[in-house]
Image (cartoon, helix red, strand yellow):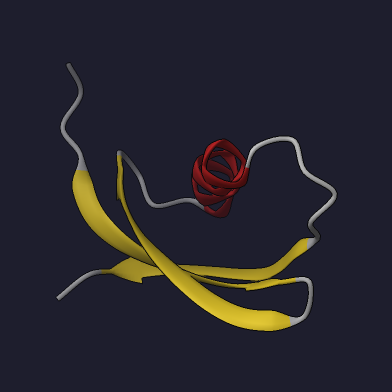
Length: 56
C-alpha cells in the first residue's frame, strides 16, 4: 500500500466555499478532484476552484 498524507482540499461546490480532509498520495489537484468525485458521487453538483495543501 502506498504512503498517504493527510491533506485539506478547499473548493467550491455550486459556488459555495467548502473544505474536506482526505488521505492522498501526492496531493495533486487531479487526485483531489477524484476524491471529491467519490465523496459527492455522480451528482449534478459543480466542483470548482480546487486547492490542496497539507493538513496541519
